[in-house]
Length: 157
Image (cartoon, rainbow, N blue to C red; front, side):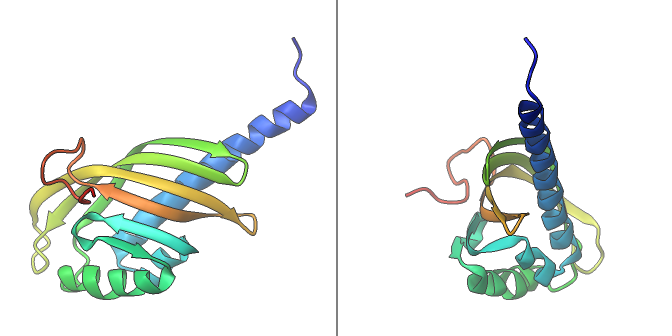
């Protein structure tokens, strides 16, 4: 059975959307590694929510300013020596909304020497939305460790 041109266009658009979301999420992680908090925050929608580990749930871009520029930056004493990377994305697109999950690994370093102290791993669950033809992150939940175990962040309930 032959597909119509419009069906091919829809499939191509979905593939382009998935690639754009992968690029967005990787850029987000890149900017976290570089401690470029303004670029990190720009990856999100105005009404975003972020729940990453011990930092707890934050809602809206204003709350992200404090989360990234004060809490997280202060945790690493401003040195930006930890290394984050995401792998194995699974992304589902439904028109202007999408969901995805990624595995994330973090090499936690000594902020003074940059030497590796330990590794952390977990899962990013994300929601994305197209805003003015550009994909943005609407929400991220970071579960560490993953699969969940007693004491995993974020806390449930």
